[in-house]
Length: 273
Image 1 (cartoon, rainbow, N blue to C red):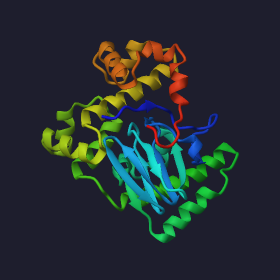
Image 2 (cartoon, rainbow, N blue to C red):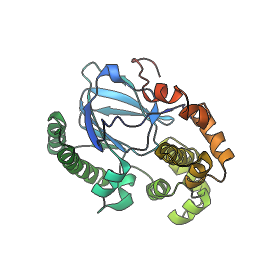
Image 3 (cartoon, rainbow, N blue to C red):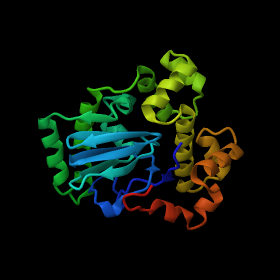
Image 4 (cartoon, rainbow, N blue to C red):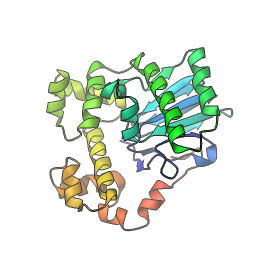
């Protein structure tokens, strides 16, 4: 599995939704975060790394990164143009309340028809309102529209589509429990999940629990033990081991040194990952 950094989505200030125009100087290394993210390819073409897979996208494609899904821009054409849209998990859940958790099961890559592409691109090209409430409402409308387009074109096996929402809501579930919920054998579920997501189900489940641990620890007032148990780990030692293997340092070192800031603010030039 490719190494990835934990880098929260760049939401300015207290904003819960944001649209930013990608420029090469702000290319981020392979990373993952708890915020769901959409990418609109406005022009040109690019190759993205997603887990141990690669995805090629051109103008008119809409890409979706679920919470915990690592992604990186590997290469792009000279005329490449990209808009990146992200919401907090809480705001996304509220905006997509009518669809429920099934929104997580939609297509990773969707080819938009000319009308939908023009509509979404026009929205992204307009400045986001400075007023937070107005901005959230406008981005929320875009978010709902974009996800309705994704859901109309499924690109994953049924097992994966059913498993993703369950794991995101309850990452403490065991593989056998998820397999029972999707009505499949554990080995079948694991095979299709890996093919569709580029990560093993176990690795993805661990990453989601680490995100919960980090969120709980960042909130303050909780010990690492409490945060680990709340995130779905069986013990703090299990959490510590997963944290070290995934992020390359211990939780204590991450939260009490400059490692966290360096990791969150890392950028890379093209040609390196």
